[in-house]
Amino acid sequence: MAENESSQPDITEGQHKNDINITELFADIQRFNRQHGLGRQMAEIMMHEIEPESQPDFKVSLEDLELLHGPTMRKIGIGLEKVPASGVILSSGDEGESIETRPYEIGINLTDGEKFISYLRSIDSIAITENQADGLKKIAESLTSQLTTEYSLEDADDARLLELFGNLQNIIQEYERLDNPNNNLGESIQELKKLLEIARNKYLREYLLATQFIRALQAEIGGRNFGPSQWHTDSRSETYETFWQKTLATLEQIRQNPAAADFYRQVVNHLSASLDYALEDLEKNEGEYTDSDEKITIAQKYRELLRDY
Image (cartoon, rainbow, N blue to C red; front, side, top):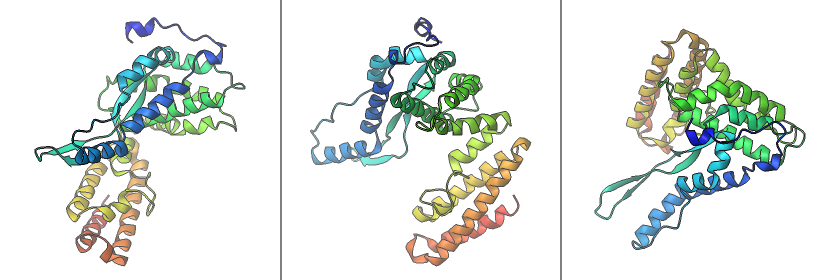
């Protein structure tokens, strides 16, 4: 913990709830995400192509957020991180070179678990406000996203991961204490609660491997998503083959851990059902998709390979 962080006073039990207001922090985070998101980035590229001399509008920076809200964040034990958002934009530069632009968003990390728990304990479960509950939901959602997409399970010294898991049980207990039918705060912590249980059962790395890359068990089969059952809908045959090659390589990693045996079987069954759906869709709507014949061959091949898993 940084020296200036430790100088922040702890929150005592019963501190007045209005002493700490995180509503404006999340309003500014939302503003940052909107300004640095995919839609805004695309609009700026299009405007530059129409008017090359045009200057982009002012954007809130991470430094602005830390300057404005640093004291509050340090007091309650959270910090901000600029992380890549989904999507990528490919455009051409002034000299015809290819430019790759990535959108960004703000992720929230736990920097001092004891201070965050102290903040939670300072909130009266009867008098908790809608704004407080909304802020806590956003923190839980961001911590979940950070854990599942940004933290490195290969790095035993990842301070973000250690701080979160070292305090997660107490955080879950406080969220459940503050939960009521009006705020449904308990729902926001369910995924973290599940991840804690998976970590205790010693297959968190394998779970994240499956969910991060192949989106196994997350993407509904045949649903409006780009999970395994829908990979054939928006890819060339070469890319489709690559998806399934990487999927089988991921399966090999998962089955190396005996503690993940039941989860591994769930993933295999989900992938098999996804291929069954893809084959049926490709055969029924053959003319709708690029490289349909090649994709049918690929799907049949990997369905047979999965029988050995």
